Length: 226
Image (cartoon, rainbow, N blue to C red; front, side):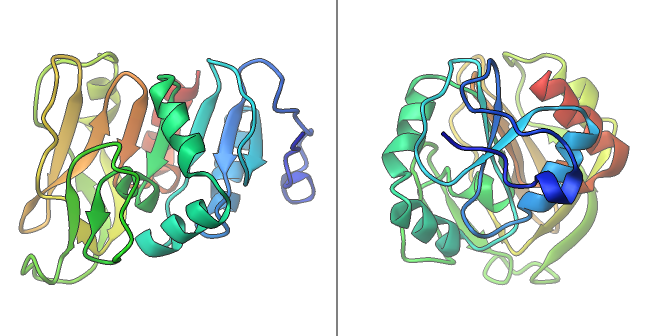
């Protein structure tokens, strides 16, 4: 049994993982987990931090937070015996919200690391330096552009396209996954076109940080988790 470990920081109740429909925050020892907890608590969403495989319900949502390196996150996944857990979660078609580096590890690999990613999605990440971008770090707010048509979640375009979201990354995926009729992906530009969001029946993947994107990001997270 795991309990939320952030009660003293944000003064909200403990929640047990076997409660109905819980948001599980994957704590890999890196990333901005405290910021995610703070943001979701403002939105009155239940959250439980985990760092090992747990039993869950079919309507639970797994959140893989963002800040950190590809290699650091993958090393933690292997050290904490989470590799099979994450693949099983995806195979069961349970929802995942994956942010920045947490989004990147869904793919096959990154120039940043010799370690392979989870390979849930095809594709690799390349440094902005290798891609000859004007700067090697993309920091700031940027727009998204819908790159294909259909989605399990038609509300997404309403929440994404009119707004700008906060990016901070130095690696990008410039190859877009082959989309089924229900998959949806968005691109952004930084001298290149890169994959900024990928959505399938159970994956909400964002290269940007919704938790750092002011009211636009809060509305997006709230809608996904509601």
